[in-house]
Image (cartoon, rainbow over all chains, first blue to last red; front, side, top):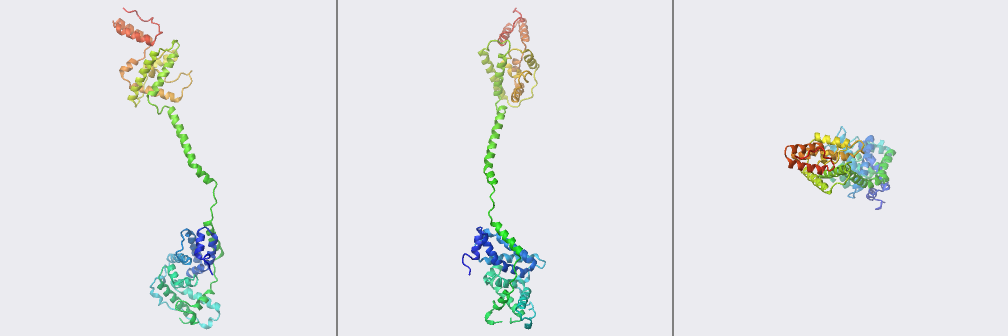
Length: 187
Length: 254
């Protein structure tokens, strides 16, 4: 259990004051979830570049850091903006799923149901989950990753992604239904 | 899946399954790079020993150098007469003329104080005229008389250049046997000579330098013409200027 001295915000304030050790603790705490968030969203080559960019932005912005929200929300806000920039810079552009009222959500065909007899092994289920996750629209996948990897609440996800709470709920609802359906369970 | 562990926005079974996939971490080289960047961003910079010292003394040293240079330039300019009024060279001219007269071979007794006063007053009045007519000094062409006077004073040690004629009669160049005068002295002479053409013709006539022989011949001419009063005045002036010159060439009055 984290104490006040060990809270992310306290560590960031200490780093702002010049405590490099505080940053190391912050980094160790958040590097895995952030890296996986970027990896699931953008793939291997881009994830490493974006991961580095996000941390360097955070380091550069340390002097102006104030506790206005959870540290994780701030961190993933930076990451989200960087991911959106990455999408916009690509030939494909910003995915349609990032629209708040994306009409395609309901029309996206569900993946074929996974045969239960092939999912006996837990490992194979995990691999199937990752495959299903990769097939999710980007915005829905992002909402799920922010919830599962970063542990953000609905409000924090809305704040980090710059969307409304209801939009986040819709995205999460859709993502869970797609995964359940893909894993063979009831949607 | 267990329905008790799931709701519309949360599925514990899915979360548990997802957690089993969280085995991927960033590569070690990324960790090192980011941690190094974070450390260097807050690392205290090594203090430079030279820079504070230089910056501490830079301004005072620059000010001191400026003051020294300015004082030196002002002093040199002052010695060169750049900032003096035109009356100052005239005064020095008076002094040099007096020295030349007292150093003349034929002049064994000290100069009369009265003559010094009159010469000084005349020179100072001329200096006042010059300073009033300042500035533009026109290029001077020495008159024939001035050239002759210079030659006489240089080679024959002509006695006593009249104080009134001192500015024009002063040698432009020091004699070869004399020590080389400073450059700024020559500049003063030049300036004084350049000012001479600004004088009125009447004053120039009065100031015309004539040899004693010519002077005596003029007096003789006046006496022959019957202008005795004028001839006596000229003679008195001649005696005042050349008190020891023999009057053998002077004709007796008719």
